[in-house]
Amino acid sequence: MLQSNELKAALAAGREVFGLINSLPLPLMTEMIGHAGFDFVILDLEHVGVNPQTLENMIRAAECAGTTALVRVPCVAPDVILRVLDAGAQGIVVPRVRSRAEAELAVASARYHPLGMRGIAGGRTTGFGTLTLPAYFERANRELMVVAMIEDRDGVEAIAEIVAVPGIDLVLEGAIDLSQSLGVPGDAQHPHVQAAVRRVAEACLARGVPFCAVPRAPGQYEGWRGQGVRAFLLGDDRACAFRAMKQLLAGFRASVAPACPPG
Image 1: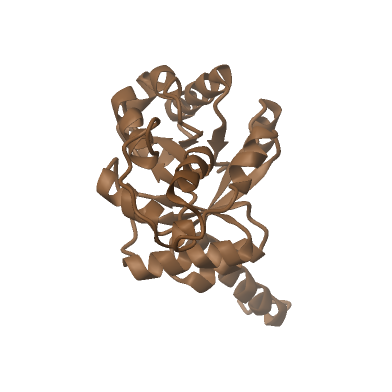
Image 2: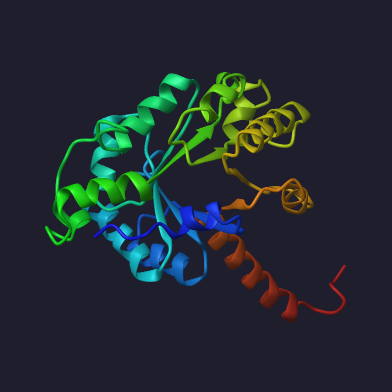
């Protein structure tokens, strides 16, 4: 049954929150991320193939571990958004939002009348009937989150209109894809990319819409905090696991390396 959205409450209260993308389609990994203390997890359907049963179990794992489960859908697709929310996700992350119309469609697809047009179903979101449909509609419209990712030049240009859409709860920067749109693919630290990200953040802060930053270089976390940003995405599980494995191995190899290498 849909519970209170702790991430949404934390953002409303101005508390700092941290999230991680769950790219490994394993409920065990989702559960681990929650127990590690992350406030939210983004289950990825954009770049990762996850079957519906596995996704539902990943959402359950997040619930068990006490972290808010958001699902990144492939695009603004009402049918996909419907199934993801019916599986129990507490919100959606919509990549490559480029216009007010796309933001409005995302919101309408995630909410019920009078705020949207989401199709009606019961199941696990209502506790299999424990919660009446009218009560669930009210709770879903209040608790579910719509997160817009800005990853294109068009999205940056339209950011003031996007954040003006009622029901956009959070804006997430996508500097890597944005770098490609700006002609410097892969260079998230390029001055043009960083200027675009700042423009997005400033529009969010001016409108009172929370902005989620992705610190990728030393000092960026502290810089964003100084500007009032309180939501941070810290990468994905694959990168974290790979770095940890390399560090573990390197530490053991260094401890047995000869003091004076031959040569």
